Length: 549
Image (cartoon, rainbow, N blue to C red; front, side):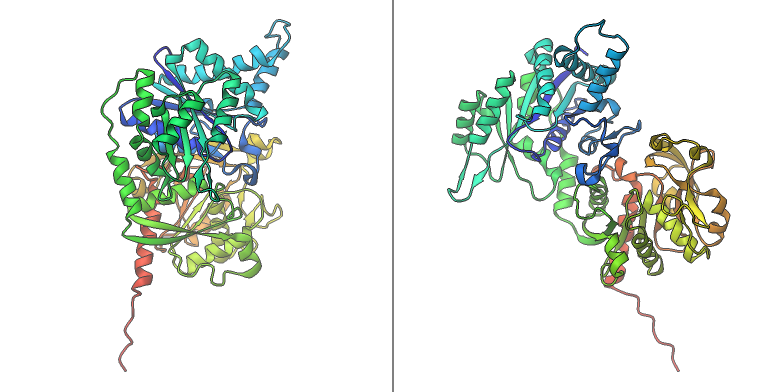
């Protein structure tokens, strides 16, 4: 671990400044110099993890390869870097206190009074070192959630202050992400909020080395010198983090233009190859200059929440970039479909996606939309619950199983085409029945999924309880459904398709978690490809000539 350098990213003035994207962007720049990075998120809430939190409270739950339910920022870490995050990468106050109390109950503190300092802060520091020991990365970037001044963040800030003292200041870099607001009435940028934020940080004992200043325009030299003077940093270490409206994937390039990577490497004494961000530059060029547009309807029950389906939206953008098409996402609320019907909600749509979720709200609306996609031959992609709804729709309208359903929605359905496995039914604890993390899948030759992946076997991440009921598999296959992928033992259906449809695929896993801007997830890539073809078909519909006579 002695070779690992550490960067701590804190936030000030207000929340939602983009610390997660900033941390991920720093990681991508260091990788551009040939260095290896790993990332870690410290969340100051008392929940053990966000797995039981409502999307209205927390946005999406991001699932790691090893099955941890984590903050959505970890998705940015993986999308911007080559780092594969794990449960070691996600730490909450709840986890820290749970570990400390468990150790106290076992007598691990030898009867001492257990206190925030040193016991809680020692546990936080041990999580930082554990990740470094497990990855051996050149640089570990740790994001501290919350805003400086929040009482919840104080133990984490105290822990990283101690950590810097123990590791040596040349091995640790503090980056403070802050806000420089523009006061419209005076037509001026104001530095006072940042001055106060840094003052608060210094009261705790942390002197930031670099300021990333969120602003709607570039800071001039005088403004940078003023901030440097009052915040006790070098003027060259005051950087503009200007709002980017085109695509978040331009942020690393923007930071590089400000010299961020050079300052970080100089301070930490890092040596690397000359910066190569050519692939990122090509990606940004394709996103900013598309050759066409496709409209994709995402039909869910959290449609009004931008972060509830964050990884879905990013994966769609990745697929669009591959085809050099802009993806216009049309958010459709499934409950509105239930109440008012489809009407014109899907007019001019080139692809329909139904994401995962839990509970029965909006289910019938989703099933109605799937029927519309199937009958009108619109490319369809169902993910997790979306795949289960597709199975129900096929059972009802192609296999003649009236009132077919999932036992999660209707425990008394006469045709439980989606249900718990027998061994799961004996487990009372809901968490005990959840399939979480990466599972292997065998792909059937000759299917669209096999063609998309280009390999006979793959693995994807899961987060669900209910499964395709094999009792009805034969009847559903006779009705036209094709099982395109299953677990290696053949017991768990992972992918369904309709062969006589232009593109109709449902998956039990969450492929959005493995999509990367420079390496789009295969099914998202092919789904957008099908949507591009549908857009072309709608622009130039095939005219069938009338028969003579």
